[in-house]
Length: 244
Image (cartoon, rainbow, N blue to C red; front, side):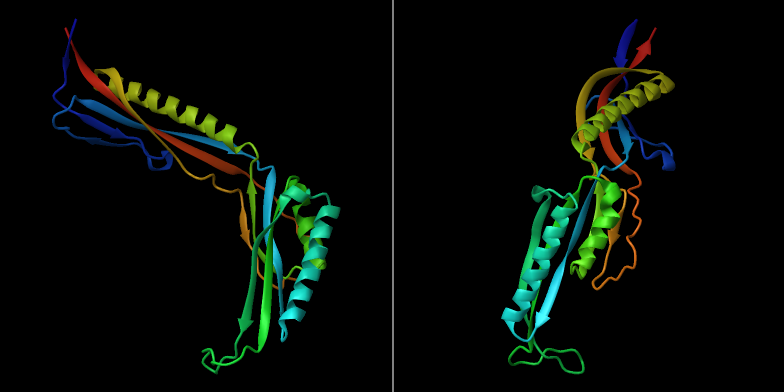
């Protein structure tokens, strides 16, 4: 049985399952006939970590007063985090800002002159390794002076392993698709010419935006939910037509 190179190049792109398979046929000049396939790997997991971003904003007519108030509250919050089991290495100052506050007119435009007060803001990033304690930690932070909450993000501590698993799944998916389409078209796969890999940042199970001056009568019940890790793999094969 002899093999001859097809005069037609076939490009097949595999899109997300929700959109179905889309196919496009094309002739690539000055190259062997090829088949292009895109495989996807999706791994779902339950987050085992939470990252909370919150802080304290203090304002006073004198900078020293604002600084003292902010430092006192932040030290109290950090002590509270340690007392509920947060390791020192999981508490990080993510920002620190000191700014003058100037008077503004009725239209909200700043009026030149001396500042009327000073604002000191400091934010922490706290990693929670037991997601069931997230609500209690937020409640404790508020009671100890936190008045700025930015976000909560759930994630997995095994992200590298999960990404590897998703990549393997994507490669196998692409290879299977190539074989499936080749069989349906009555051709044979030749050499694997190219491999392109790509991925996306893991979609967090939940990312909640928070606001300043929050008041809570009880600890919030916050569920981690699930998250997805997606990887894609693009393969290019030569194709041949079988002839009797």
